[in-house]
Length: 170
Image (cartoon, rainbow, N blue to C red; front, side):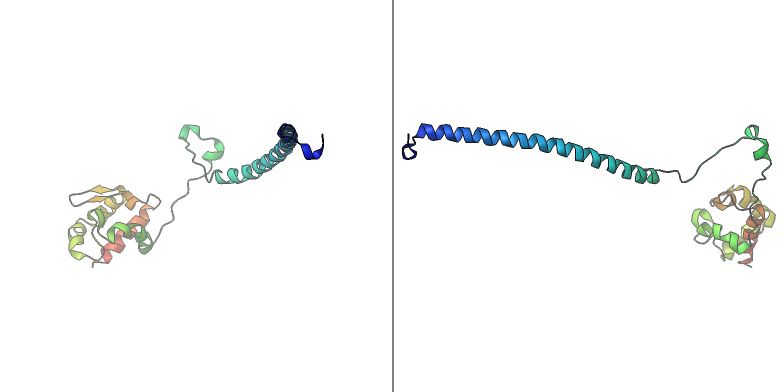
C-alpha cells in the first residue's frame, strides 16, 4: 500500500493508535506529577504548620491569671505578704472616680457645684455623707455605689473626695 492510497480505515487505525499513545504518555506524566506534588505539598504543609503554631500560640497566650485564695488555703509564704494598702489620694484626685456621675448628675447624683442639690445632704453632716460614699446608699433620689464603684479607693480618699465636692458648693 502506498502513501497515496491511504484509505479511511488505515487513517482511523493510525489516528486511534496516536490517541492511545498520547493518552498513555499523559497518564504517565500525571502519575509522576502527583508523586512530586505530594512530596512538595507535604513539606509546605509541615513548614506552614510550624510557622502558624508559633503565631497561634502567641495569639491565644494568657495575658494574666486570676487566683482566689481563702484564709484556710494560705501558706506561710503567702501569709507573710501583707495586702497592698490603697494609696491615699487628694480630694481632687479621688474625685476623678466620682466625676462620671457627679459631673453629669447620673443616677440622682448631685452635680458638683449645685448648692441646691447638695444642701439637704450637707445638713446630714460630713460623717454621714462619707459613710454613704464608702458603703453605698440607696435613697429616694438615686443610688450611690460603694466608693463610687471604685473599690481601690481608700476610705481616706473617699472622705477627701466628699470634702472636695462639699467645698465646691460653699
